[in-house]
Image 1 (cartoon, helix red, strand yellow):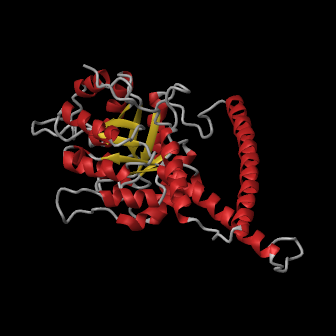
Image 2 (cartoon, helix red, strand yellow):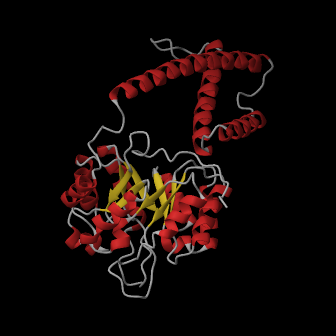
Image 3 (cartoon, one colour):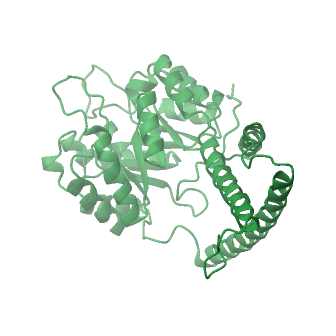
Length: 373
């Protein structure tokens, strides 16, 4: 029986709009700023639009490299600024979520160990409530379809609608050529049970060895999966984690070529389509500015009434009512709480400034040469 959950498009890049799979690539771990930046620029040159890097690494043994932690997040911010790529990281605790949102990470994924723990998934889902960030859920370590579906459903229950799944193979104790044997029937069942859910494949963790990455990636795309998450390091031999399964940027480019995936920069939409969409954006921006101007004029009139009746400029009860209502209406329209709060706090501050300035002018406060208060 299908799981009846309503999902929104991931809106990452690639995918059905141009018949290209979503490609996410980058190092297993962010190790140094230089490594992050060099890998990012190399992948940007090869057409990658979404950059992955582990910040916190859930290692089996405590002595292993467990990631650089929060200090690596500014490196990703810099990589986004210089390359224009979106940034994706793994989160495993509510604290990770808080840091990811604070540093404007574009995509988060839930690791296999975390997916296996419903308590952890629930806490992370609560922490993400109200955000519109895409969430990718990796399969649990064990081949448990219900556990995987349950994690997706938990995020959906907390209002997350931009959800995808990542198949990275399953642990087993029998001998296999793969690090995590794929057991392809399980992701296929997931697609059948949740037909609206995008499912990507992680050939790096499935294969465990770089020479097998092409084999599992080709198989996944042949089974109509929606994209790939590939580990790429500027110098894999020196990687602090999972060095055997990471590709060099050149190896990655060759993989894309062999798979027939077009990753040329700037080719995710036809120029004519972009021009038309940008024209619509410009028209909407003009309409927004006109509305904002009208709103500010009314705000000034309100200021006059406040002065007439000797009322304070800031009305706490009215502001709390406004922000509460606007957040609720914005959430209904698919916008995040953080975005709505930011927009209306700025509008409110500008309104207060105008009202205070207008009052100062009426009291004879000197004006500068530009007739500004």
